[in-house]
Amino acid sequence: MYILALDLGTTGNRAIVFDRRQNVVSRIYREFPQIYPKPGWVEHDPEVIWRSVRQILAKTFRRVSVDRIAALGVTNQRETVLLWDKRTGRPLCNAIVWQCRRTAPLCEALKQKGLEDFIHKRSGLFLDPYFSASKIAWFLENLKGVRKRAERGDVLTGTIDAWIVWKLSGGALHVTDVSNASRTMLLDISRRTWDEKLCGIFRVPPKILPRVVPSIGKAGVTAKGLFGTPIPIAGIAGDQQAAAFAQGCFKPGILKNTYGTGLFMLENIGRAPRFSDNLLTTAAWAEKDLSHADYAVEGSVFVGGAAIGWLRDGLGILKKAADSEKLAQSVPSSGGVYFVPALAGLGAPYWDPGARGTIIGITRGTTRAHLVRAALEAIAYQTRDLLEVMRRDMKKDFKVLRVDGGASGNNFLMQLQADVLGIPVERPRILETTALGAAGMAGIGAGTWRDREEFLSFRKLDRVFRPKARGEEGERFYGRWKEAVRRSRGWELTIDRKKV
Image (cartoon, rainbow, N blue to C red; front, top):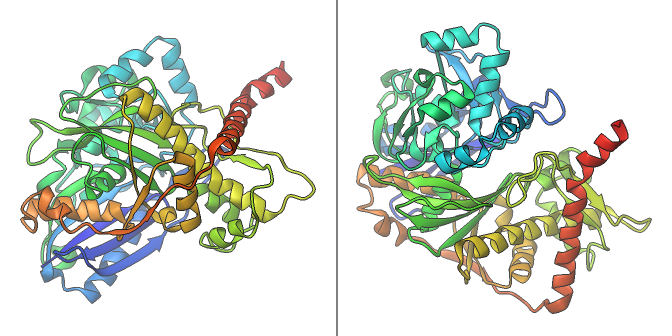
């Protein structure tokens, strides 16, 4: 029997089938379009996401019989959220993506009311447009007639996991797991339940929210008429929590960083939440019931691998993202060019939605190779930003970084990362750890693996990148990066002065 993982990403969806020894039996991927209605706004069409899921699952089941699937695990892009009609199942709007900054004014207004500290202590999150609550509030305020319908209970909301599980179950399941719920800014992080005060602040009727369920354990089954044999849905988790699970972050001190659209560094902090002035506190996962959960601290960078995507799609200086490695190596350095990819503001540790993308140090001799190298260096420097604050706030000296995600396959970047951090970087054999983590949770929930230790016993490393001496020169380069970040954060102030 096999485990099927459905990985619902920011730029595409993939279905991966694993056997008990974590070998990949089938892998299907399909991208979907990004929608940019206005500067700073990012949307997805929920029907396109669902159609993509149907297509990759149909293709999967042409390779692997549905009767051989023991369980399904779902992992997703977390904060992205939508509303849909409870009766018809039709979306009421495009989904607002986690990168979207349209709700910055609402977040700023709540800060002016002095609510920032309460929200942080109750939810573990910082008051930022990144999270779902302000996005749901935007829907209710801006979609005509929707607030009244929501108050009657005729509307449902949820992150992408809730939407797809609802569709997979034929409308029988309106659920989300505790890890995704903890990213909405509406969950009491300590009690693991929807919080009336947080819902009141954002004016979100609790009745439209999904039921919170454990990450590991059977939540329900797929609709009988969808694929023939119903499949148990036995694992649900946000993508970064799923990656941490696959990387074996089961106890404090183990650190992982995912190199995807963004960068996400997590450390398991045990069974009780702890709060930081710079890092998010999030639910990692809960097994079987919600009486307890594992927690994590997280540093979230909004634009990591997406910077390379922008160079490819926005500027057209790359044909394929994979070309970045060879091009970066064609020059001995970035030639003094620094690129701060604040294309959606800055996340941890700055939490500055007003920051803007900045490229400095350009001369007549600057080439596309220098820009590409600067973009890869920015990924490494942003990761160091996270590690520095993680060390300070958690009062730990981490000895190794476990990495995953598409960009971790770039050998040049991973060696640079080890050099910039000064610690070894471990890359596993399976880079798609978000899918593997979802499969692990579903497999444990279905009994394929006895427990998480047995699941972890099959983990294998691909390569360890060890740091090479950089010394004072490396510190000087990092200091220049910090100066470039400072300039990116002054952009909004400069524009305001011009207006005055």
